[in-house]
Image (cartoon, rainbow, N blue to C red; front, side):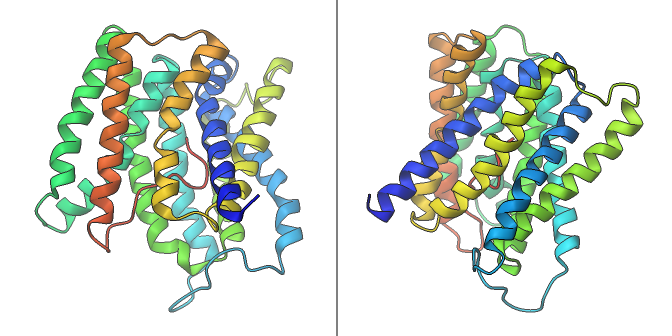
Length: 305
């Protein structure tokens, strides 16, 4: 298979795995508190990634550091704090909102990144953002209308979009300073440590998962976090950022499909139209990000919430 085709195939697989996590986390949330779920998921992911780090320690997986060296632990902790905020708000959201709605709400991070930077830098809004914002709002309105009244979980999902936008911006500023796999592991370890501290404070009596939770936890930790990290690292070396972003924009569509197949959630005509508007808004958000070289092109990394 040609390298470019292989890269596309790997990124499609990554997107499908990410899309499946919304339904799995929603079901697992009935067995575990959010803090305990995240703590075990990232502990499993960190342990699963250690062998890959040992095998590739002599290979150049990421970009060479440019400029003054930055402490790996510090950047890993900063990114880990953004990540646990994203995973925490999304896991809480899925306790009261549907998996497909949470996926489309979370996708708004792609629109929020260029909006955030445009406002911070006091630049005029690009034309793509002028189009993306009303489409995103209209899409969310249709999704909420489809699923009934606006619930508190929808607000948590919007908070997830905001925090994940912050993660994307922070990642863009630090990723080139570190080797990719080591930096990813540093982030996972930081999330693991923060999540266990949260779990020990919030749920000291519910730290050990029941038997029925281990299968989903292993899937989330190994397949949806560690494996997707490696596949994304390999795939994006063969595929352009624009092509990768286009594939990642379909993640909420994959989430809606898996939500139907795994837990029977349905999305009607209004919801489908709302989801389509959100996907179009994310593509326009990516276009807005590409309009300015200093604005990072929003794309999921290293594992979507």
